[in-house]
Length: 168
Image 1 (tube, helix red, strand yellow):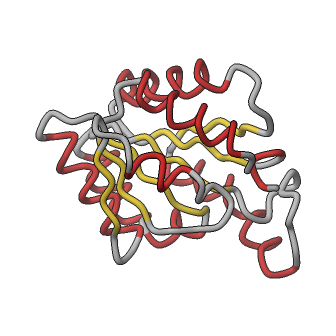
Image 2: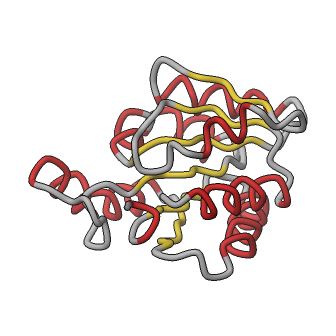
């Protein structure tokens, strides 16, 4: 991802009221990590697994901080239990910032990720999690704000899937 897109994504998160981001590192969107880490208005918490990241973000949200979880789409599989029980069943709004590996618009797609990408949307739909696929930076900040508002309105997780120029 280009540095300018990373800056805009972090600004979009801040503008939407995200104060805390939990994460398990991945490669597509990793430029946001130092930006969040160096921002005094945001908190960044590394996790050992995506399931742990979802649980931490849910706890922060219940404690009054709007939170997001940054992961690659394989993390949706790993965290599905927490997304269902904490996110959906308990009604905790969490923004999922997801590197969409293996999706059609993934510019670095390979046989390693194609199957994962093919099943990401059906898994999200099976979990009842709404999502938006972003392939370019057009109206990025507005889309991030819309996603956070949707998570809060729906009282559950909402996934932003980053592909296209975000995967360069």
